Structures are given as C-alpha cells and as structure tokens.
Image 1 (cartoon, rainbow, N blue to C red):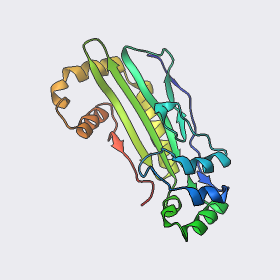
Image 2: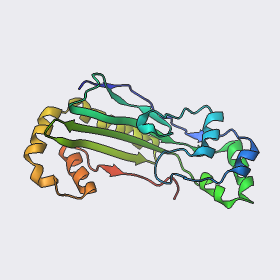
Image 3: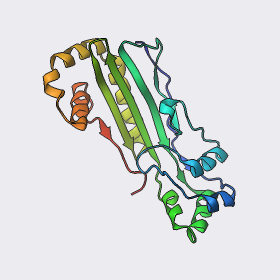
Image 4: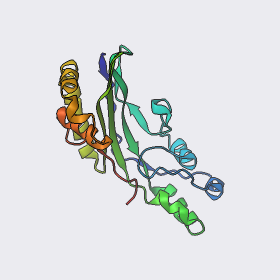
Length: 210
C-alpha cells in the first residue's frame, strides 16, 4: 500500500446562493433527505448544479460534495487496503436561493428542511487488512465539524497519524490484542482502534440541522 495525499481543501464558506426554476421546487416532494450525512437528494442537486458545486458520484457511489483525500497508489488488493478516504462539505442556503425557498415554504412547509441546513465539514478515513486468513477493519474515522477551523485542524492531525504510523506493526499488535476488541459492539470496537492509533473517537457525526 502506498498512500498518496491529494491535499483537497475545504470550502470555507459553503453556501448555495443562486435560485433554481420555481417549478422544480413546486413539483418536488423532497424525499430521502439526508439528515445526518452528505448525500444530496434530487431537488438539491439542481441547486448544487446551478451554483457550480461538483458532486462526486464515484466515492462509495454516493451523490455528495466529496473530494478524494488519500488514495492508494498501488491499488492494493491484499494486506493493507484503503477502502475509502475523503473530505466532505455540506452546503447551506443563502441569498436569492434562500429567499426563493422561504417563499415556497408558505405553501410547502417541508422545504423548511432546506432552510435549516447548516454548513458542515467532514473527514472520512477507512483502512482494512485482508489476507486469506484475516479480514479486519484497521481504522475507520468519520467526524463532522460545524466550525471550519476545527475541520482544518482535525484534517491536519489525522494526516499526521496517517503519514507517521507504522501500519504493519499496528496491525500485528491489533491481532495480538484481538481478545480485547473482537466482541465489542460496533461503535466500541471502532473506538478501541481509533484510540489505539491516537484518535479520540471513531464516529462523531453532526445533524444537518438542529
């Protein structure tokens, strides 16, 4: 495995300001709205498109404002394997786009979901270890931030861990300590490994609106 940092940069002011065609709002049911993550449903895609915000559909086959972060330059298929790694940004609404949604909310209150979205930034790093005898998640970090500077700082801290960890030695020790984590519930299992590698908590996700 040869990890390459593509050095993506967070958008500091993630706002959608340009309005869309009014009939798209009137005819939409706003279904499958993601209240926790970064998946962008059909109506919102119009806003992202007209505001020239690219949605990535290749990472995990989601339609999300995601950027590839680390990639495996060797495309490893055994032992240490990078499953996925990205940074993400959830855009909120402002300007004419916000005004347009507020007007529609008079007759379609469900559109309040869009108005209540708050800017959010996320990091996601998932590393596995696979052999004929072992299938093991090594480290999986998913964390959201409601403050841009906090997101940038966390990205830098995790890059320090990724770049300076002896992953082979870490895997060997995790296997030796398997009895300590193999029967934990999913969240505790992931937290154990996060703390093992010097990160405080595996999953810390924020709602898209309060």
